[in-house]
Length: 299
Ligand code: SF4
Ligand code: SF4
Image (cartoon, rainbow, N blue to C red; front, side):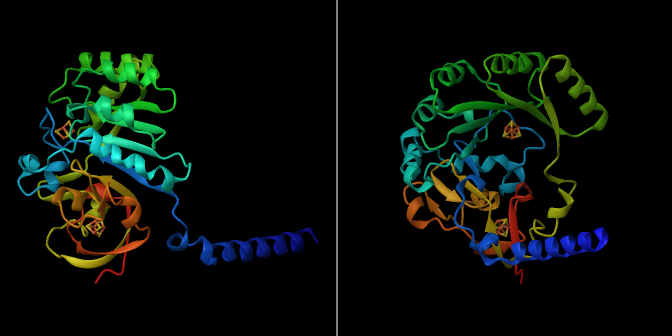
């Protein structure tokens, strides 16, 4: 009897689960915009004071990082136009990543961080080459927004002790999420992780993303990033990427190529649409898109 009850419960659960899965209201395409699901990334500048061999931007530009001169950064006041989205976001608590290049090279990062209201959590991904004190002061002053850092360590250019000292300062002020570095050599990565641990800093080694010896990494992106077989596809944007000049893109490839913008910070609330969009550039995807985009109907 217990067995048949269990069987009954199991089949009911299965039916229920199937029902849930097939319910049109729960399909991702029909779900109303859930802003907090999006990966928001604000590229305040693409300039950087380092020139790492493995920089993923090199994959995106035609002339490596030499293309960066083409990208002019908008003023902080222009980027603060994002605050007009306050009504669209309807009280949700989206988290934004402030990135680059090196975001602390942006003129007026403090002015921008001082004025931004719509993001309740802002995480700055920085190589920590610049003075972090002004941002710490701001973070301590502003109680309505959580400002934190991810410290990216680049051993080609950064001295480990100097980097860790800044990371500790951030940590002491409750403003360090963690540190990371690109995992290029297993034995070296283990040593680096040990060094971070001894310094009391949480750190992660991230796999290389980009192209090396003519091969794209991660491997699963090879078809979509081969740069040769350009095809049409429908792509679901999982990212809102704001370029340095205020244009909004749904993928890194389009941002770095500067084409196919969805809208800009000025007309975001009128033009931005959730759902699959037609893309004519499948094959030119950027490896950073791994895990951020869903592609179907490739033809
Ligand atoms: S610090 Fe980051 S953005 Fe700058 S060159 Fe290195 S990988 Fe690229
Ligand atoms: S298919 Fe590739 S290039 Fe096109 S939007 Fe998606 S990730 Fe970007």
